[in-house]
Image 1: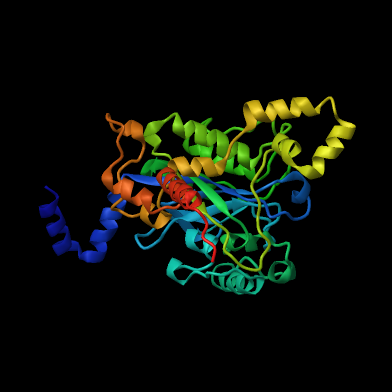
Image 2: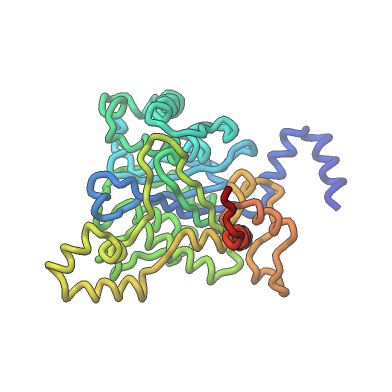
Length: 372
């Protein structure tokens, strides 16, 4: 049925136009909550606070502060909100190409395999010249370490990250583009009521109302990145049609300090050695309440979510030859498609992969040690 149509299109429009048509006909894009690990800097050393952002597979930057639909050769984007991007105007958010956000380069084949501050600085300056030249001219933006646009270049040099992904329709993506291009992009950041997690929650709720929530109990009234990731994951798993998947990008090996796992408020109090002793001394009556709140309502392990819902990288997620839906509920038999099984087996961290590693280790450990 499609062959005559494709032949006609090829003849009349040419190959480039055909590819554009095929991409525009794709029914689904993706949106995802990015949960970054903590950098262990400043107040984060005590609070365990982390950062969150939004991943799109079909929305790309028309500029760092304007959105459009992606072209066929583009691989999505990341929209992020910070206390201070450091640019000439106080923008609430910037959007960067996905590959630049994660790897620092346009083509993943050119990505660094070792992370250092010097390499990251070179990639930041290259991005500033190519994309931020009109938005970053003041001294603090050009030279200041506090200009947080820098965190949007080569992010996996400084931290590991998880992305919790679901499908979107073309209409949903177009509605979001229209909404954010029409709204004033003005920074009103407030750590208590309008932080990066509130921003991500607002974007996700534009697609799926009430799908992401704050955790009043475990985060003491604030919205935390981990609460947004947890509640959105629960929402997605309760809606099998969303085709929920999880990606994991490990921090590059290198000389940059290692990031650490993200935590909610009560989790940090419960698990941090720095805070446990002061809590025992000063708040011994409150400590059992904190522990109970975390153990009963606040537990969420991103790594476990990845093991259960691992998927391929966004380059393949955004390809017109997408893998079939992976959710077991999509099939009456509950069996995964053979192509998806093979894809999962190639990802270290998928459930089968962990089982195979465990079996190999068990057999190796059972062998007697030989000594000369």
